[in-house]
Length: 79
Image (cartoon, rainbow, N blue to C red; front, top):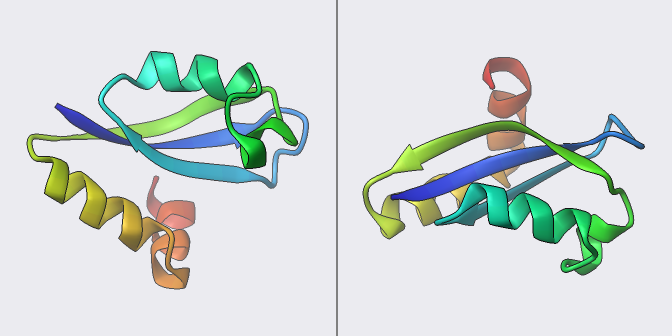
């Protein structure tokens, strides 16, 4: 399975991070341990939501959508 996830910063609640992985718990730990340049500025993070996909291509497509203005609006309202 492939997952698209949305993290929310606990120190800056208006900051979100969207990513894709095959291991959500590992990625959350990496974000909270400075493994990502952008996300380390706003740590600690908690998992707001994640969505599972059977194919990597579907996950990539949905992640790209969530990073567009309309995708961010969708996530804010629905996820």
